[in-house]
Image (cartoon, rainbow, N blue to C red; front, side):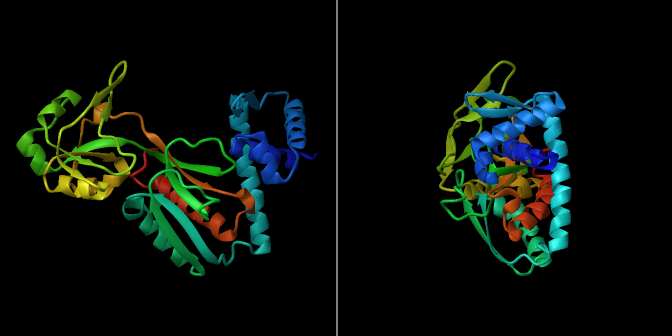
Length: 300
């Protein structure tokens, strides 16, 4: 197997996190993939993959080689697409899944710019809770928040988001600004019954995680309604940083207890088929990724 093909095989394994998934993507046997990786490691005289019961992980040398390989392969693929005209006029329906409120706060300006650049694409968005199933739900691309299970899907990181607590300036002027999570016992809160939302607020402390159970003055069925109520001064609300991005930028909400915020969660674009994906998928990934990474709602 030549060096270029070895690099392709390694990059597929690095993306999928699984020898078997990479073999399916490349339409090769798992034995062939394993042999190719072994030959590559022998030629480089270095260990690139660490094998374990849950699959494979990149070694430090593997991470460096993967980053270089991805750039080289992308340059080659871009040159081939340009020569073949594959990216010239992508067309057809592109289905993109998004977390709730991500469409309103972040995605729509990017979508409008994409459709202006590629007018033959028809964009269908689906805002939903939980991790979407691309194949079963016929989804081309999904913007997801949280750690991904091992799968054959390809993931492109765009940044991180984190849970925050915020309130309106009027509320904070009347009730004061909490200085510690324990201060929340003397505050009003707005909660939501939306699926997956916990009515336990978690905060970072020196040695462990602090858990506070706020007493709600209002409980809403959607996070959108809870955030709206908070802007009207009804109480403090806990939400993901992107969910209240516009309100924070406009100054109608202010973050509190930011020094106690727990660790952020990764945000990623996921899709199937890798470089064999349809032109509308590849152009969308290439178009949206740098814009999402530059968006202030995502932490670098």
